[in-house]
Length: 220
Image (cartoon, rainbow, N blue to C red; front, top):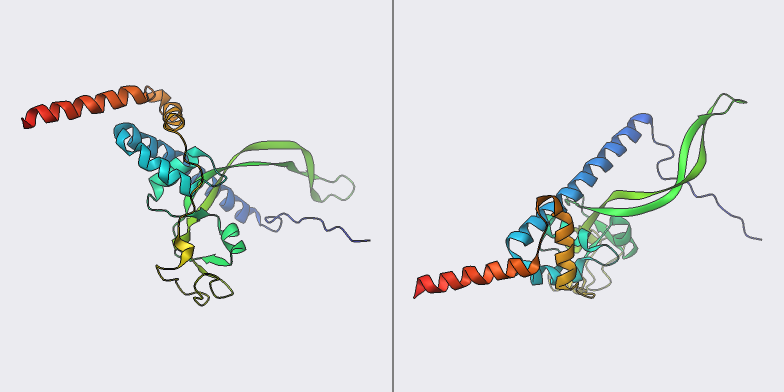
């Protein structure tokens, strides 16, 4: 019979200082992801002619992530081609460059609620499971251009580990999924900008057309 191995939590050996530092970083990343969404929403609301370009962008970078995350990524790196976490890039045999600046996105997480309690029999502090939790946390993701082959040559172009693949490498080719509809983008903007009055796509387009009409009259 096979043996079962208990999965070890990646932060199980953190010191209190390391745990506090990790929590502070996650909080800062989460705030950065939220701010990026708001900045992206404000941009598209002020320039609705960019919505179709954003739809194309979202089809490249979303993957399994939400449209809101695509909006936040656009605000952080509008030229991104393909986006993944360091963990998933490692599964493709690629490593993230040490100097790469991450994009911060929100990620749904579920798991056991771990609490620390003192064992009355031993006097030692132990971790126990008390129920479940579900919520949003932050995740750092990177564009493919922030990666290099890791331990083996690039499977696409043969570039050696640690070296940057040439621009002609197929790894840089965009992989597009379904593009969100204009209505889906408008609904997202309306939700994010609700405190500022929301977003009405029809009104924004009418205002744009009116501005173009006035510009045309001025040119006559």
